[in-house]
Image (cartoon, rainbow, N blue to C red; front, side):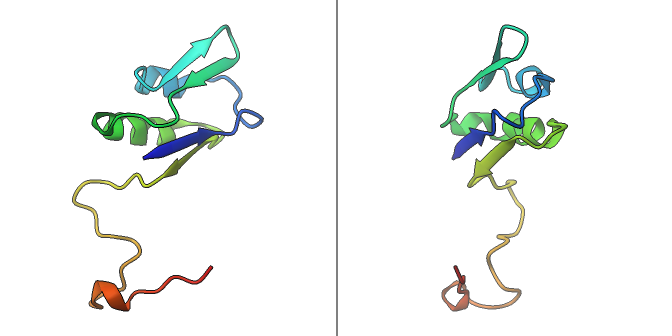
Length: 86
């Protein structure tokens, strides 16, 4: 999984650093440092940090909730029948 933080949007509330300290670290009062490719073991903490960001500055690629249905799969359709338009 990969993450990107929009540092122009980030306001330094530090909710992410509080909820996922292995991924996010505050540098000073407003600077944020983060691991763009966190370990898979951080998935649950990362999901909480993303949800807690008051300005929605954290963008995540390929973070799925374990046990959740695949959002790209059509209901009842075989996986090969699902197409995505770009």
